[in-house]
Length: 161
Image (cartoon, rainbow, N blue to C red):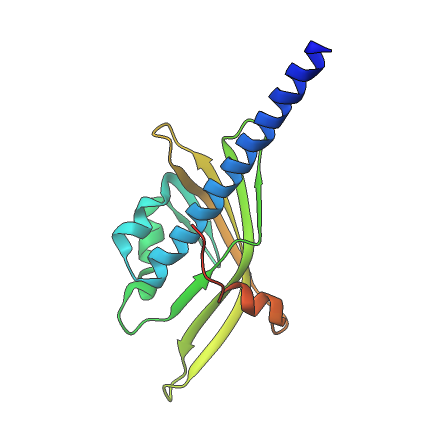
């Protein structure tokens, strides 16, 4: 009986630790988005692993190329982008994670009118030796249809990180 109680306690602790890691990654993803929302390139850089790959129409390798590819988002008159994770999955060893969710990009057309574009992002995070989660792979795709109300609302909710 005592062995069963010890096993139950260990499983409970393990589930709690996993939930904490998932929440850490979720909050890290939100903070990453907030760095772009605030147009803070130095903060944005701090989330990118030295060996990162961001895949779009081309592949940007490493922080310098990624920052160059994202430079328009940091310009005062550049497009605005915001994303939030809907899914967070962490491998059992607690060192690699996936985040996935909607993003919204707002740019201006030639007449200065706002144009909204929606899509889905996917980020792979690795726990670095300094204890920080950093993005190693990132990719996204443009949505083929307008987002539903739940998706729209997910980007307008108050963050709890």
